[in-house]
Every structure is written in C-alpha cells, then in structure tokens.
Image 1 (tube, rainbow, N blue to C red):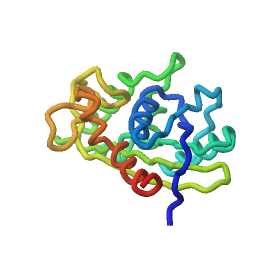
Image 2 (image 1 turned 60 degrees about the horizontal axis):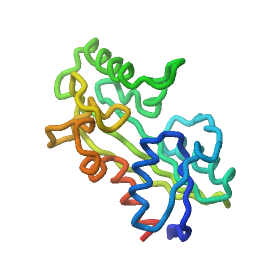
Image 3 (image 1 turned 180 degrees about the vertical axis):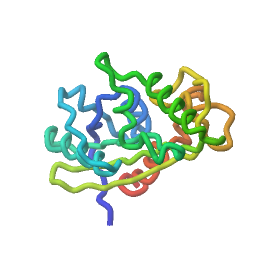
Image 4 (image 1 turned 120 degrees about the horizontal axis):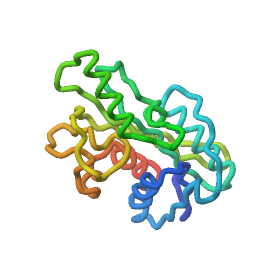
Length: 203
C-alpha cells in the first residue's frame, strides 16, 4: 500500500526553474504549494548512482532531511538507442560548461555522435523521468514515465528546455521545443510519471 501525501507543502529537490514551473502546475489542483531546494538555499547533493531511480532517491531524501518536509525529486534524461542509451543518467552532465549548462552544445554532441556512427533513420530515442517522493522519516515512493520519439536536426523551437528542440515524439509533427507548453505537459515523460504518482500518493 502506497503512502498517501496529506500535506499542503512540498519541496522540489531541484534548482531547475523549468522543472519547478512544470511540477508546480501539476500539483496545484491538489492544493499543494511547491518550494524548490534552490529557494531554500539547499545544496545539490552529489548524484553518484548510475540509474534514474538511484539519483532521484539521493536528491529527494537529501531535501526531505534538510527541510523536514516531504520532498519530490525528478531525475530525467534522454536515451538515444544509436548511442547505446547515452547520455541517459548523464544527460545534464553533457551540457555542463564552466559558464553553466549549454544544451545546444550537448544536442550538437549527440547529433554529431549519431552522424559519426552513420546511425540509420529514424534515430529512435526516449525521454525518461523518474519521480521520487520522500518523507523526512526515510520512506519513499518511486514512479517512472517515458515518452518515445526520434531525434531531429536541426534543432527546432524555443519552448521547453534541455533536449526538447531535437526530440520529436512519435506521431507528432512538432518537437517538444516547438509545442505549446500545455500540450507538451499533457504528454511528456514527466506527466506520465506524475500521473502514476498522483494516483498512488495523491489519489
């Protein structure tokens, strides 16, 4: 039996403003307000696991312990079949530069690597999102969502964030970077995971 979330305040274990906007919109119907770990001045713990679930747990438990409130973390990334699943859990790392994250650089790297391998079209890929809801007493619940699609080049669209401009979901003509945010949220890997979370813990 999954533990029910019965509070009205949730900590998002992230410093990512884009994720905060998405998660805040998703929990608003439940009367829950969201504060990010960044807004609380919490550090970002080192992500030492090689799975989305492992890293999601690290972030959620760290935020819950340091805020004394339930915390929700999101570990997500893009898996490219032609690159044997890379960048996967290292999606954000591929964008790291001394000046901050540069996802245009990271997307270019992914496409160039596919070109070097002469990967045939369609270059299938999926976005994966693992959500972990952790309580200060150490309990947690974990949910995963995925959305299938393919890589497209050149990048298209100014909406979204991360690898959205090069990801074309199956059956769609617009990339996540071109889509209206509400439409993307309705079908994204995060919304799939969140639907499972809401049924399990908010239902």
